[in-house]
Length: 68
Image 1 (cartoon, rainbow, N blue to C red):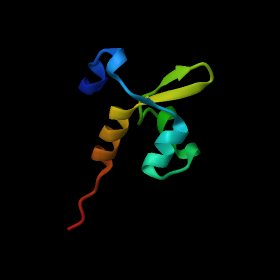
Image 2: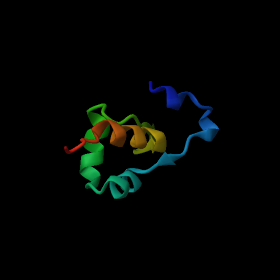
Image 3: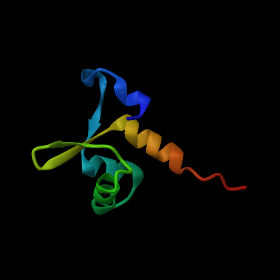
């Protein structure tokens, strides 16, 4: 588990699949694939998923490609 996700649960801001898709400008299906492949950590609430906002930020930082 990433160190940033060790915060008390009350301090973690969770996003829905649709919110994550809007932030990174991909389809909801792409976000579901990232979750199911383990690339993006999530918790399941009933039939839906919630993703920590910090996990989305870390995913984007790791995926960043510098163009020279």
